Length: 270
Length: 240
Image 1 (tube, rainbow over the protein chains, first blue to last red):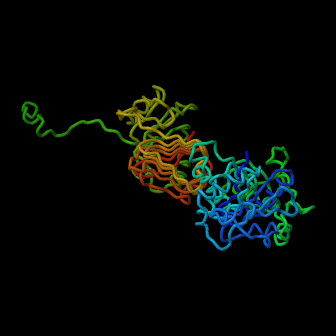
Image 2 (cartoon, each protein chain N blue to C red; image 1 turned 90 degrees about the horizontal axis):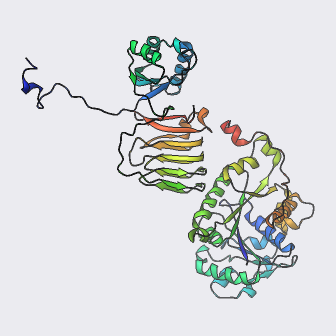
Image 3 (cartoon, one colour; image 1 turned 90 degrees about the vertical axis):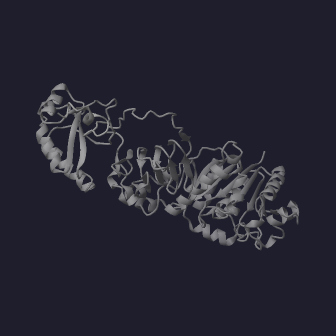
């Protein structure tokens, strides 16, 4: 049975699409049939990060509306086997995402894929709700910064109350924390929240810490998921993350031992 | 004459009437009878809440007086408290000897409380039906609002910043309270808010509220209870 995973955050610009691209690529690299769907209708980005923007003919909305079939719209990745991309429409808006339409497309995809990765748009409106509604698991992407953490908290609340699993009283969506753009030395100085601070606020299991890295920007602009960049810290961190998701027990890298964190300094915790 | 005239002692026009009534009183739990220490601590408390102790009736609880119980100078204590605006009206608990010397200083012994600890309340209000409480066993996330109508709300997890927990009755939070908690929203002044770590954005009972800024930083992150005393929100440690 295929697993639907939403990559979400609430706040924009924290690394959802970067994470979706590398996570999906990592799953496919390990032999799992994987499709990654861009739910950001109107602000299509995933195709750029995946480097397939020139091959987009049909999109997600075309399939929902029955204007094309899945095989016409799915873009097969050229670097990694088992990986497909379903791009968003750039000319439509989020209202084109209907619950019935999304469900039908997901059910079709479940026939031929092991993992369906849904790259959520920012916000908590229709696009984000549709991306998370059918999820079995969720990667909640957060930056070590108070507003990002609060927005992630909000999204966790929505996952727990407005997903299909919540509405139908099924076991809850399995939550994973991805802490992106982390700079241990700045956390040590108290400039940013530490891993501990974020975990204390959100209280969900940590799947991976992605260090702040020049490679992310470079590979985004080059259209290569950073997980494919050899020798990059961020890429290695994403590889670890995928392994952990698949059940391997790996220690967290790229975090140094914590001194007194930001929250503690701010509120003088006892 | 008066006594002989049944018309005057009758129901029509009595000079007074005795009735039982309930009051919420501040209880001062005395631990050490050391006058200087009491005065110091009192000054500190008054600095935290200036105006709060103006003509406040207090009951002195002697349950905690263990060392040097013989040295409690009740008239001195009375003067000291009066000097700081409190009006001692009686004592509670304590050994028979202590109670005797308190009585000599004009402080009657009030009936002992069942549960030493300050939060005791006699079952005076015979509730016809027990209020229903709502148990919420997940964390309350930012943006979520949980309401317990007609009863207590019990939250087993943390209440995040930006979340709101509301009850007509008490609110118990077994995690951190980082969002807003509003108890007694239908106007009942009796309910309290309890939490394991007070980091709230706002606490309110029966419409009286305090925002984060108005909470003493020393109380942050501690296990606290919040209740109303004479229309004022009191925040105090859950354990002594």
